[in-house]
Image 1: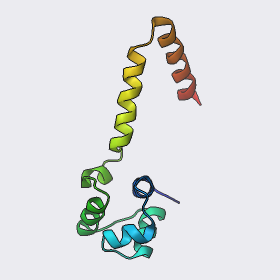
Image 2: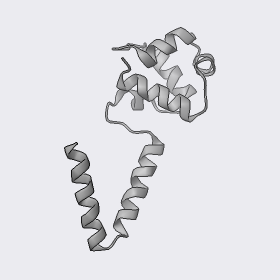
Image 3: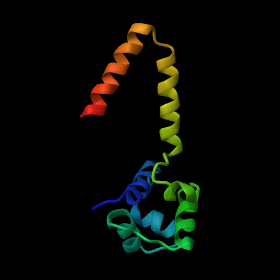
Image 4: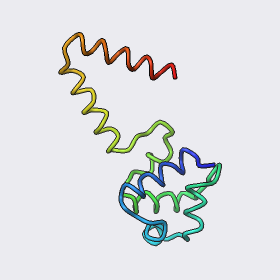
Length: 106
């Protein structure tokens, strides 16, 4: 079962167009260890491995430690959404709020 931690690694790796082999080489770890980090429950990499992984993916280590963290790309999309929302008229904003409530319930 993939963990939130593992999803963060996998998503960043894919976003950057990297294979398991390429990221493993860049982070100085084995492909099998990287696969385990992406796909196994309760990964516990050492601080050194985590720092190496963060550097290879051009991320801050805190991104991997914070369960609520989002990538810079996700933050950019969120800001764009709210900017667009702010430009809507009152009727459209009300419709968007109703849509969001529907999504929250499901």
